[in-house]
Image 1 (cartoon, rainbow over the protein chains, first blue to last red):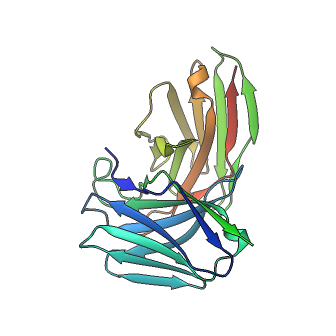
Image 2: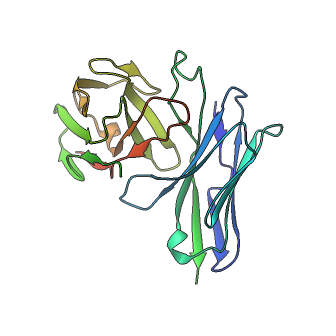
Amino acid sequence: DQQVKQNSPSLSVQEGRISILNCDYTNSMFDYFLWYKKYPAEGPTFLISISSIKDKNEDGRFTVFLNKSAKHLSLHIVPSQPGDSAVYFCAASGFGNYGGSQGNLIFGKGTKLSVKP
Amino acid sequence: DVKVTQSSRYLVKRTGEKVFLECVQDMDHENMFWYRQDPGLGLRLIYFSYDVKMKEKGDIPEGYSVSREKKERFSLILESASTNQTSMYLCASSATGVFQPQHFGDGTRLSIL
């Protein structure tokens, strides 16, 4: 039973356009959401996060939007660059994931973004 | 910057061998984690630790054990390696507190022959 879902395994975007990566979750106890970027043969790199008290967080070209009522978050990359081509993982955390301990993340299966020049 | 170092980038072992994967972090983080990543399955949590000598099972602990004798070091042990444990193994650490991201090492690509 997936608690964090990334329904698009892949996404292709033209350089300079907007990339929108989506993520849905089922557990209303989640209160912290993160996006990671992963290149092949490297570990995931933390990109941006948002807590449940906000609905938007922006960092340069990256913006994360959170819609709590829909249990949906999205990552916007504007403008997209070829170097953004990677697998993006959505992750969520909240009390009660594992015996009440905080800090554990539940990951989606990832979306492979390809930005074409 | 947080540095999480995994001892090997690539490792080849044989079925039945006892395998040790080592992870060291330099930020005095309390929490450390071991994941495996497989195509189409994302990252799955194997074990984690919130303090020295403490360990808790994640989603897929079968066939694995861990050791945390020092705060900075977290070891993953494959007691008797099997071919279905061929995977990318990722170690992560995080500070204790609200809304703390996990920081990952570069991973160990383990092949069991």
